Length: 339
Image (cartoon, rainbow, N blue to C red; front, side, top):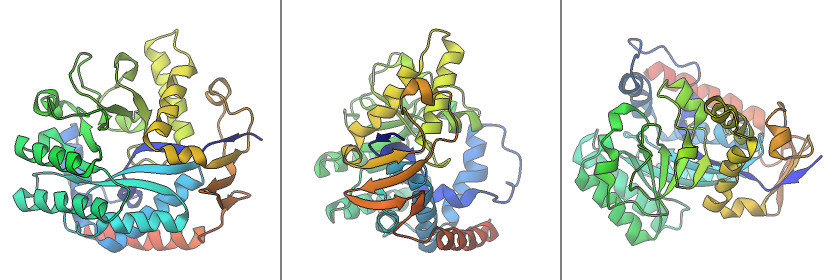
């Protein structure tokens, strides 16, 4: 057995945990824009606070069971905005997982929707919540909205969490964001971001999601920006994200080694340094990139978060996992019925 600090999932959508098994969309999506319209934008408008709570608990439980003790979450629920970030924070705390969350503002629901999203970020962070200011993406926001979000982040002394160039629809992002980004911004995906760009911040690489959405391979080694690993809502198993990031890197560069992808995993600790204080005892040793790149099934046996044992012999100590899965299943049924 070997030990490491707690892992960090640098880009997650906790609300997506209830999406599994959702009804097929009205028509088959053939572009990234249609995937958003037919799947995710239908789902997020159907969410209520009860669904958000149990989805977050399920996602936090699965994170804990994979050795991830810290999650950077990007949330959207346009018909249940007020209080949503507090619900997420409380749900994760009950499981024993750290979370830094943000509400992704957008102009898709008009000026009032953008304003309410902005105010949810302000409320949560001003009340002491561990958060960032969230933006959905440049292509769903006006320059005015982007400037308002950047201004709020500066006012509150936090960074911004935003999707950037995930699909070709967001190709104008570098121009729309020029002069706004800072080193504490988190830029998710960046698949279609040009090699040369003027955006500052850490790039969040989500290899499995990018493959699933057929948007391409980001090849993040090409950027000078720091790179961290996320899942974009497909669980929170950062070890599996590392393994996929490595083989994708090697698919375009035969000289690539696991070390680069492992460096991306380690960048998560710079974004959520509290996780370095956590302790995970694993079922495998040694926990180094050259072993883990070729070893499946590695799991945590014991996890300590902030000095408290939250998983022992692979079982959570603060919650009943069967209850969480049952309640999440009930909420998923409610959500799917709305769709």
